[in-house]
Every structure is written in structure tokens, then in C-alpha cells.
Amino acid sequence: MKRRELVGGGLALAAAWPLRGFSATLKNVADVPATTLAGGEVPIRGSSIEALAASLRGNLLLQDHPDYERTRHIWNAAFDRKPAMIASCTGAADVKRAVDFAREHQLLTAVRAGGHSFSGKSSCEGGFVIDLQQMQGVRVDPSTRRAYLEAGTLLGQLDHECAAFGLATTAGTVSHTGAAGLTLGGGFGRLGRRFGMACDNVESFSLVTADGRLLRASASENPDLYWGLRGGGGNFGVVTAIEYRLHPMNPVILSAYLRWPLEQARGVLRRYRDMAMDAPEVVNLTFDLHWDEGKPHVGIEACWSGDDHAEGEAWLEPLRTFGKTNYASVAPTPYVKLQSQFDADTPHGEYYYAKSGFVTELTDEGIDHLVDVFARTPGLYTVFTEHFGAAYGRVAVADSAFPRRDMRLSIAMFGNWTDAAASEGNVEKMRAAWGELEPVTQGFYTNYADADTKLAVYRQNYGANFERLVELKAKYDPMNLFRLNANVPPKI
Image (cartoon, rainbow, N blue to C red; front, side, top):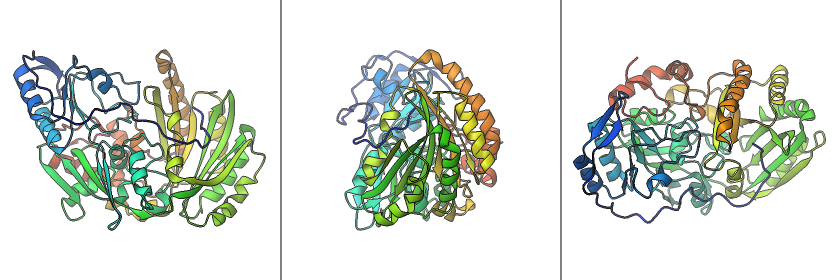
């Protein structure tokens, strides 16, 4: 995958959803076989399906529904799954009905918000999908600096609404990512060093728990849930709405993208390291190793969100003048435009695979090793960093479920392709390459977890927070209804 230079505009939503309306009546429905939590198959009576459909404002999609095929597909085409039923929810009432149905029938249940799932767990084969894509909307209150977001909303809409009022919060780096999934896993982004992770900026969550209750989780209401939802993923219920704290920020930031041939990568990355480790908190500085038109490159992206752009240009000068670039852009840019610049490189319907790990330092030997591993697999994947420190580390490990507050960088390996037949070979090559890089990392970002990640890995990753997550899971989801996620079991 190549990293493109700054481009205007964003991706449209994957599907043009119809206006919300009452569910069509289902009549004379035959029994439908469905996969259970235990992995078996059970026939769901047609009368039960009809009753569920009648109780929903959104549509209940069976496999013969004209919207089923469009709706079942998720962003990552590597997972081509056909659930028995999809509940297209329009609000918390629909979500409650769907959760009650899933629990009563003990169905294998997936929750889809944005559907941006590397591991494919926002869908399931033969089970039940609770789909939140119609639950989209953001309301910004400038007086209280709060944004109220429905759980199916994508990040681009959140950024757009906030920017109109000179406000912002940390919200990923690709505008068609779902806000809820990103936030539940932690939520990195270009503003994280200044404002903290997305989960650090949540004032409250609304969610439907496995027993069908609609709860609010905040520092004062159900604080145990509030702790777990900030980094513990979708383990505890279906989040229906999120209230974010916002921060004043000029909607036009200073952005830069600089690129050099790979032959200069070792020197560029040493300069990058020396600047990134002590960068001001208004700077997000990332690098990538990528292939473009058959040639390898090293690139650095900078986002300076401070008001003084001249100060930002002066700070970036040692990078801009380093070596001999083959592309250089440093310019004031609308933040919303910067947030969508990689949308075209991550389209819906391609085959994706990713690995990641945190590092607390980047040594000369580590840089050399990284470049060597990347150069041995031409054209298959991009290696990139995410930049931490500053506000990321101001929250104590015990204060939220997200465990990795000492991280300085994340090293991620990301590949995408269009040929299904190439998937098995490409994934094997990426696993082998990551096997060479993983020993220099510590833990990983659960939002990049793949389908093969095992419980022992999650346990190690959550560290001291794992036992508390298990207790929370046992309290709110003892049957592990919500298991298609970075799953923490209710008992170990």
C-alpha cells in the first residue's frame, strides 16, 4: 500500500442508507437455522423471527432480503461471512430488542458499528449481527464543549461537526473508521499527544448490557463500566451513544509530508527518532516505509496543531532540510482534509492484514533491523509508526482499562490487496516478517488484533488490568454473549 500525498475530500459512506423507517412486516417466515454461542446450530422459529421484526423500527434482514447482501459485507473483504439474520437498528430501543433476542436464543452475536474490523469480528457466519450503521449523527454543544455521537457514526462526521465550532478531539487517522470501535479500543490519532486518546476524552457512554438494560457509564454513574469501556473493547455491551469532551483548536493546522528514497532511510529515521522523542505536545510525527510505483521510500508526516504555524515551520526545518527529499509539502491545511488523506488507500472491500506492537525506545540497531526486514518483501506492505508520549502518559495505568501508558511509539505492519487468491500467501509472508520485528516490541494495540490472537496474548497485553476486566465481564456479561471482540472471558 502506498502512502499518498495530501489530497482533498473524503470517501463516501460504503452504502447510501435509506431514511429511517418502520420495519417491514414479515409474514409466514420459515424456521431459520442459526449458529449458537456453543458452536452448534439451532432452528429459530419463524414466529419468533416475525415477532422480533415487528418490534424493531429498523429492518430485520434475512438472507432473502434485498438489502441483506449489501449490509452483510464489512470493510475487510478477507472475512466473507453470512449471518443468519441482521438487525439494522435505528436506536437504543432496537438494540435492546436485538440483545434480548440474542440472549434468549443464545446466538453467536456480532456487533457492527463502523465495521472497520481487521479481525472480521463485526460479522459472523450463521449467527446474529446487531448492526448500528443507521445510528449516525453528531450534535456539538459549543457552550459546554461536548459532542454527542450515535454509535454508528464515522470519524469524518465527528471531525466535520467539531471543526465548524473551532473544536476538536482525538479521532483516528482515516475518516471512514467507526468512532465507537476506535474509542472502545483506546483510540489513537493526530491530536492524541495534545488531548489524549479518544477514550480519555469520553465523558460518558450509553450502552445496552447483555441482560437488556440501558445504562449510562461515567465517572459518577456505573464507574466500573466507565473504567472498562475505556480500552476494554466491546466486552460489556452494545454502546449506543458516546459523549466526548472537546477542546478549542484552530481548524487549520500545519501539516507536512516529506519523502526520501529508501537508501536514506537509516539516517532519516535517526533524525526522526531524535525529534519525535522530545517533540512538543502539539506535534504528531509519524514515519512510514512504503512502496510506490515499484520503488521503496521512507516518508514522514507531521501534524502541528498549535496556533503558531511559523513556530511549527521552524521546528520542522531540521527534517525538511535533511538529506535529499523526492517529495516535500509543508503547508497550512484544514484538519478535516488531513484526516481524510489516507481514505483512498484504505477502501472498503479490499483484503487487509495488520500487526502492531509498542516500543519505548527506537535504537540504531532497531532502525537498521526494521529497514532490513521491510526491504526483503517488496511491495507487499507498509510499515508505519504512531507517535505517543505527552498526554497519552498523563493517565495512570489503573485509571482506565487501556494498559500501555509508557509507550513512545507503535510500530505497525499494514497490507491490503484486491486478489482473494493472493491472501493466504500474503498473510504468511507478513506473519513471517512480523515474526522478525515482534521481539523488539512490547504488547500491541487491540484495535489491530487479528483473528488468530489468543487469550494468553490479551492477558499479557492488559497486564495488571486483566483480572479487573475479568471481574467486570463476569458482572455484566457472565454468558459471554459479547465474545466477538478482543475478548476477555467471564472466568479463567
